[in-house]
Each structure stands twice: as structure tokens, then as C-alpha cells.
Image 1 (tube, chains in turn yellow, orange):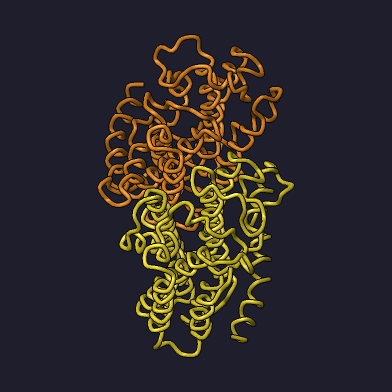
Image 2 (cartoon, rainbow over the protein chains, first blue to last red):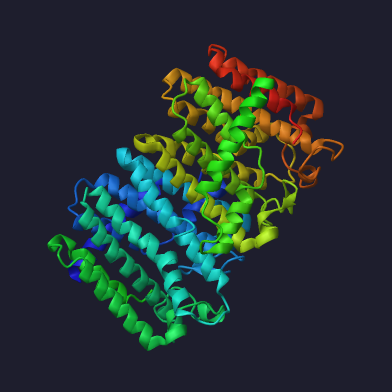
Length: 292
Length: 292
């Protein structure tokens, strides 16, 4: 794990630096919108998606980092917008995120909707500008992952199924769309920027899909955790809203087992990759043990 | 004007046909999201932005229509998303649009936010897929026009300045960002798809910026109209919310004169274009006289 920590600690400042530069300045009009955009992105996220993008890039052969770092930031903008919108009163109605007020609590609901909208546009602007003659491919990848058969579709199903009987088939789809699609997109994106071939692309996608579902199960397990120690989000919010989750549907133990299985599935997908896939392998273990 | 009507009536079914096909089917899961997306796009808009995209495409030399028609649909998806979000309670809080319930009134607020989010993603997916090796350029164009220094920025200023003293400098910026940026983007997009040169691009952009501001002034004048006859939107909503508008700031007569001036400015920008810019010239007159 030391190697992984080194990788993440090296990548962190690089990603934060680019995010800071790619965002509009807060003293530029409309100031309140730009301030709220910076607040929502630069609020100390785990930057898991950039890490997966870069780890997949290295696993697929690597190359010059400049463009892929910007692509990773684009995905992080996309992710940040979904959090801002998911937190809204009409959605999950969350007041706190990452130990701070959510965007709409800090800046008002109208502005929070606009922050999400502007971050989505910024995501595509950043990605297209970084992609050069690959932009048709990369933009379609991100747009599909983010659209009605991806992140947004998952959130729609999540809302639609609140308060209903737990249904593992629905949970599987929610996890795959809401979380898995963007995480798998990171892995495919890293592969495209490394110029990886069709087989690598398919394997990295497989890794990403398994890792994405595993990540969501672990998230739901954290919500079920008994103490608030070491966790940045209030406990029990999902239980209270009767969200569809594996821990609620099949129990904490079985959900934990499923997460372990998904982690192994992710690693198996890249078993023929060499040492250059080290960080992806370590991430599959690390994400299983995370505490926030 | 007969020539323009022929152009618009020919284009209408072509655009509706493509919009219908590019949208996800309503019987595809998540059904309610897809139904609401179709409701919001296929609700009988004027399709002004596709018309301007195609008219600019022709003015810049034209060519094969398939790709530019899809690009025009992408811009229409983007526009449709902004309407859905602008109508939300936390924004302009409108119950009716195009003589029907607004999206959140028909489908609920949470789903309406998601409809807008998914339509924005679909806009970029459609545009990138249509653009081939020009995708880096076209996606950056649309993303900038739609972002915090474009449509979203204009809406943020609009909300921020509600109820304050009318300020022509702010109005100019709101109109330019909120409406002008996407309309000018249509004109530049048409030029890019026709392979137009830098000078044509600059002139078409100039046309679009003037036409966009003119269009917004006419919109505000309609809100000030005395009767509800022939208008699809309830009157007086902007006055009631004390929006920043030229009619409120400088009076109906002076605002009307400014719109006429902007129409002339638009036509002047393309004065060196030949007969292939006919529809753009006619549109600059037509939009000045519109009743809805």
C-alpha cells in the first residue's frame, strides 16, 4: 500500500493545481456563481476518479501526462456537479457534505442548480480542449456515462424507488448506472489517452464496472456503520430515506461479501496486465477498506 | 418572407424527425425520465436555434446536411435543458410554457432537474458524434456558450439582479450572456460545419450576437404587451418579478428602437455575403416581428 499512497500523494497536488486553474476565478463576474463553483469543487474530495483515470492510463501504457490530467479534471467537474444536484432539497436534501454546508445551503437553491449546470459545461469544455483529434470519442464516452443511461438515469431510478420494497435487481442497476458508469468511464478514458488497444479497453472497462459497483456498496455500508467516527458524512441518511441498497436488501454481512467479490472481479479483469497495472490492483483493495 | 417560410417549413419536419430519433425512447428504463425528456423537447418549440444554425451553414457555403442537422439538434437539446431549469421554483418559478405545464409541474421537481441534466449530456453526446475530427472545436464552442460566461452566467446575473434598480449595463450583459451567447454559437457552428473561413466566422458571430440581443429585447417587449392574444406565455411575469429588461429600464418605445437597431446591425454584419445569406437576412426581419 505504500506504493499506492506515494502515487496518490503525488497525484493529489497535481490534480488540485489543475482544478484550481481550470475553474473560473472567483473575482470574475458573475462572482457569486464562480465562488460557488470553486467552493463545490475545491472542497477536499477524495479525487478517486482522477486517480482511477491516471492509474488506468498507466496500466494501458501511459505517455505524456498533460492531456490526461486535464481529462481527469473534466471527470472530476462532472462528478462535482452530480453531487451538487444530488444534495438539492428536491433530490436527497442533504445539508452537509465533506464536513461543510452543501452548495445550496451555502449559496441558495437557484445558484446551486446553476453551479451544477455550469460545472457540467466546464467538464465537456475541459475534456474537448484536452482531447484534440480524439474529442469525438472522449466526449461521447463521458456524455453517455453522465446521461440518462448513466449517472442521471441512476439518480432517477434511485429517487423513483425510494420507500419501496428492496429489490436486488433494481439495486444492481442503480449502482451500475449511478456510480459504476462514471467510474468505468474513468478507466476507459485513461486507456484512450494512452492509446491502448481494444482488448485493454475492454478489460479496463470490466475492471471499472466491478470497481464502481464495489465502491457504491462500500458507500452504502458506511451509511450503515454504527458510529460516526472517521466518517465525513452523517450516518443513516439512506436508511431514513429508505433508499435501495444492498446492505438494506441482503444484510450487512452479505453486502460486505459482495463487495469483496467485486473487488476480486476487478483485479481478475486486469490479471494479464503487467506491473504497470499495480496501482489499479492496489486501488481495488484500498477502496474496499476506505472509511470515508 | 415567402422564401423564409418555405425554408422554415422545410426544415421543421427534418429537425423534429431527428430530435425524435436522437432522444431516448419513452419505453426504455428509466421510463419516467425519458418520457419527461421527450415532453420537454418535443413540446412544439419554434426551433429558432436550428434554423439559425442551418441558415448560417448555408450562408457560409453549405455542404452535406446530415452532420449539421444533428449539431442543430444538439443546440436545441441544450436550449431545452435551460428552459426546464429556468422554469424551476428556485429560479423563475413558471407553471406554464408553450401552453402546457412546465416540466416540474408535470413530472415533479427532482425529475425536472434530472431532465435538464440529461439533456445537457445528450447535447454534447449528439454534437461530438456529429462532429468527427472537428469535435474538439465544436464542443468547446457549445460548452463556452452554455457555461458560466454564457447561458448559465446570464441566468445567474438575471436572478441576482431581480428586484434591483434597472441598470442598462447589467441588462446588456444579461441579454448577451443569457440569450446572445447560444444564438451566436448557432451561427458560428453553422460556419464551422460549412468549413467557412475566419472572416466568415467572425461576421457570422457578429450577426449572431446582434440577433441574439434583438431576440431577447423582443421577448421582453412581448412580456410587456397589453393583451394575451397570440402569445403562448402568460404576460407580465418579468414585470412582476422585477427582472432587468430594456422595456422596464428605458421604456417600450426606446427598447423597440434598440431592437430595430440590432436587427440592422445583424444584417450589416453579413452585407458582403451573397444570396446564400438570404435566410439570415430574412430572419433578422422576421424575428423583429414575431408574436410568440
